[in-house]
Image 1: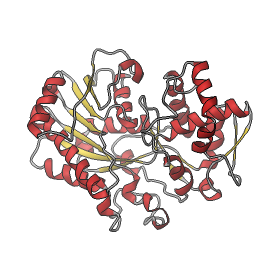
Image 2: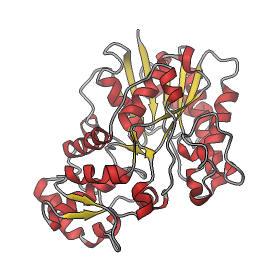
Image 3: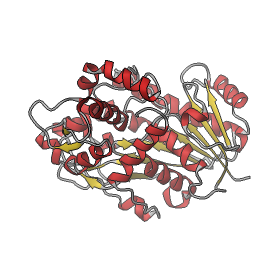
Image 4: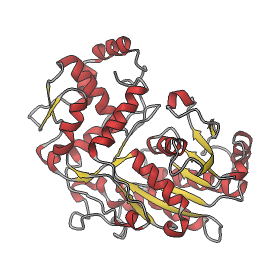
Amino acid sequence: MGNHALIYGASGISGWAIVNSILNGYPSKDAFSRVTAMVNRPLTREMALWPDDPRLQIVSGVDLVKGTQEELEKQIKEKVKDVETVTQVYFYSYKQIDDPGSECKINEAMLERAVTAIDHLSSKLSYVLLPTGTKIYGCQMVDEFPFAKDLPLKETLPPIPEPHLSQLFYYNQIDCLKRISKGKRWNWCEVRPDNIIGFVPNNNAYCLAQTLALYLSLYRSVQGEGAKCPFPGTEKSWVNKYNESPQDMVAHFSIHASLHPEKTASQSFNVGGQEDSWSGKWPVICDYFGLDGTGPEENSPQPGAYIDAHKKEWYELEKKHNLKKGSVDSDITHPGFQYVIMTLFDFDRQMSMEASHKVGYTEEIGTKEAWTTAFDRMRKAKVIP
C-alpha cells in the first residue's frame, strides 16, 4: 500500500492543486495509492476538473469547528474510507474572522483538531504540511514593511513586531504543530508562498487570476480585440518586484517536502516563481485576452467597478458561451483583494528560494506559464469564454 494523502480544504487554490498534481502523476504515478479531498461545500470531480481516478474520494460536510474532538473523529472515520492508512495531511482549511484575536484562536483550534483526529485514526501518519504566506514577513504592514532592507526575504528573519505578530494566526499554527508533534512519529513543515496564481473550481476569497480573467474577458468583449488596457495600479506598483507563486509549484514543492521528511522536517520554506514586476506581467496577461496591456494612467479602469458597470454585458457573455453562473456575483470573493495586490503592495518583497533548492526542489515556472495555465483551466471549467 502506497501513500494516502488527505487534503483539508481541497477546493481552495492550493488544496485543489495538491489533489490535481497527485492525480496527474506528481512526483510519479505510483507515489500515492489514495487521495482524500476534504471539502466544505459539495464538489463533484467533473466540476473540479480532476481526472477520473479510482484513487480519489471527495468528502464533504466535516466541520472542524463544531462538536467535540470525539465527535469529529467519529465523523471522519465514518466518511473517509481507509482513514487508518493516511500518511500525509495537507492542511488548507481556513476561517476568516474580522477580529484578529478570534481568528488566531479558531484557526489554531481547527488545525489542532484536524491533525489530532488523523493522528488518532491512522498509525501511519508521517507528515503534516502547513501553508502560511508572506504576511509572516509583514507584507500587510505596507508602508511599515519591516524587511525592506533585508531582501531577498529569507526564512531565518525574525518575527514581525507587535501588535502585528499577535494578530497573525500563522504563528499560533506553527506553535501548535511544534507542540502537538512532540514525541510523535510524524513530522511537519511550513510553506510560504506569496500571492498564488491559479484556478479554483468554486470561487475563492483570494484568487487574483480569476478576478483579472473575468475583468479582461469582459473588457475585450466591450472594448473589442486589440483595445488598449491600462494597468489599474500606480506608477510605483507598476515597477516593484516580487515573486508570485504558481499553484502547481506550491503543490509540487509541498508534495516533495512531505515525501522527504529527512530533509524538510520542522522547517520553513519560501516557494515562488520568477521574480517579476507588473510592467513585465501585465502585457503578457492582457495578450492572452487579445488586449494591449499598457502602463498605469490617471483614472485607469478598476476591475471591480468595471465589472459592476457592465454586468448586463457579462450576463450576455454567460448566455452566449454557456458559462458557469455566479462568478461575478460571488459573495465569497474578497472585493478589495485585487486592489491590495496591484496598488497597495507597491514595495519590493522578493523571496530567496535557497532553502527549497537545498532540499532538492529546483522546478522553475515562468510568469507566462503560471498565468496561462490558470486561464486555460478557467476556460475549460467554463468560468470565462
